[in-house]
Image 1 (cartoon, one colour):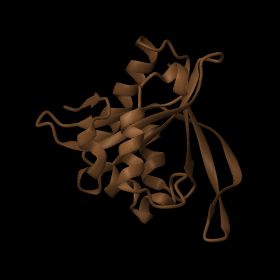
Image 2: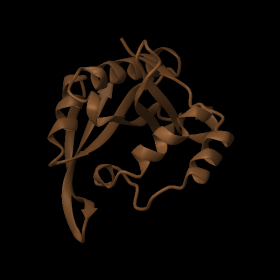
Image 3: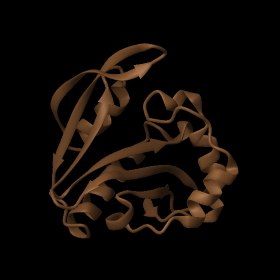
Length: 165
């Protein structure tokens, strides 16, 4: 039901809305807002070559063409054939199975196109929805990272998840 596609200039406003949502900052690594200019420059200079950039961002779209989220590959390690993965689904599309479809699609791409051996992610101990999504997608908890995420001057634990491809 979903497809993954490359970034396009039309994504600037969508990324601006998502990247500047303080509610999302606690689960990612963003600490400050992005300007439209910064996002435009990012998209304009984006080449999509994971081997040189060590990262890849793909937009999640419905058959209608509507963009509902993004999936990121980052910390790409070709020598060890692994990569970190992150996902964002817009609020109004959560809990409808789109996140699971996107994780399955990116795993297939990583296995068949990039020949990766594994994907991994971290999820805060209190991010129940994300942990459940990755577990449903076949990721296994491999350990607990103590005081891993800082929020408002306090630290919280996170789990690391792995999926062998």
